[in-house]
Image 1 (cartoon, rainbow, N blue to C red):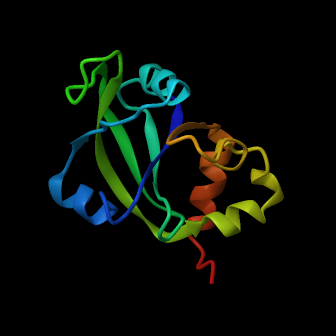
Image 2 (cartoon, rainbow, N blue to C red; image 1 turned 90 degrees about the vertical axis):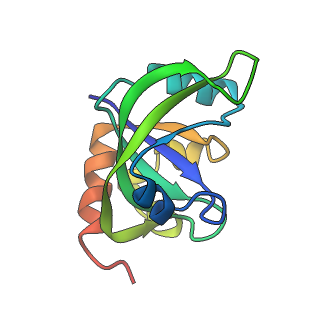
Length: 137
């Protein structure tokens, strides 16, 4: 199993909206590196759901339910995956907290901050899950 992080602005597509809908097609990715990440995703892979711009925090866990296929919103060579929510984090984990945590200094969220779909190492995923169990305030 692999681990990933997807970003969405909460004013565009929030975690709550995602949960209400039950699944979504992850459309609109227009970056070549992010496209490669989408194409590498396998059914069952887990993802962190990150609220960008407003909030700047990981708010939930999702999973890949359908592997990469042609983005229906584009005639060009872009890909999508279908994802479904698994659960909200007990406590969201902020970007500021991630940046201040030495064990996460190499996470792609920081190193490749403009990337909307990025890989997460298993150790990073597990570490953030542990962080989410504690109130970060």
